[in-house]
Image (cartoon, rainbow, N blue to C red; front, side, top):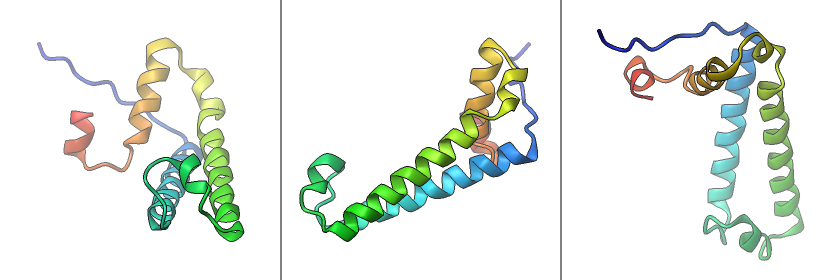
Length: 105
């Protein structure tokens, strides 16, 4: 018999928080890629940034930190334990992936 992957149910607020986190992460990646000195090393790139660019970078960092906190601190995780919590968190990251990608993850 094959291994059937367990699926988890999430409250709407947690799905919304995960989608918000994914959106913030995408925005931040796009912003960082637009920086003239971006080489993948944020600390090195910061040396050549203007005050406005530094402020925008800090804003994105804080938005990502807050969005991440909303996901991992949600009370839903207390209802799961051990392996289920880890698997459910991983599965939530792929909530909007096409079905083929989810089964491969």
